[in-house]
Length: 278
Image (cartoon, rainbow, N blue to C red; front, top):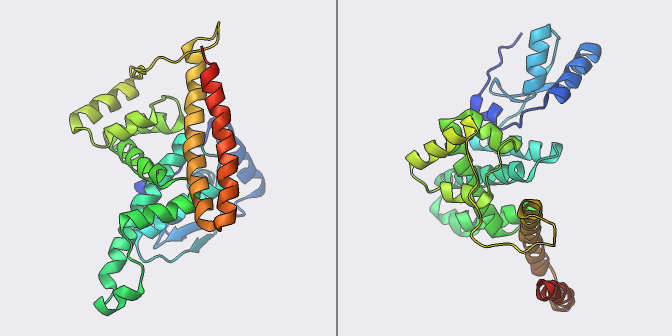
């Protein structure tokens, strides 16, 4: 049987399965065998980590299929795209994957340009960070700013993971909630600050920073009950803005005028809601 290599970076890209899901997968493999082949790249496992472990533990036969990629970053993009299309990801997991996708794509295009002859450069797209962000914004139907923010978030989470893999796991599973703004700020923080945050998360002593802006709530509703909804609204508006910007670029002038009119009506409703807050 072919020796399979486990790459920690690739494996850590995959969200951990909860105990119940893992148990059901194990039962299914024991009853029906491993019907889907594991995917390899140069002998390295890139899809099927949970199945591989269960099959190895119980001596269940399995097949493999090989994929070809030129760069390691292409493998990262393939794994990310595979996970995004296959799983129900939480907002923080999706942001993390988009940030990693952006980082990998930047490196791929930077590497590919090294092999382009000077005379051919005018005939090829120049893959700089801005164009990569725009392409991914269209792909994920979010704004370019969201992609850049996700990149900073992913950098912070990875930096935390280098100090404490357990802290990284807690963030991505939602066991500990760290705001996206805080994570983005940590992307440029000192190693000492990142280490401090990582250890607090691991130990369970991390406390979120309180918002400096007081939020008005309905009578009987505490700030803890409304803050999560406000955060959800912020994510929805940010992602919706990206989708609308993409639509504007695809519409003719008449369609743009109509879309602007619809947006104006929604803005008016939000303004009315704002004025009604006492």
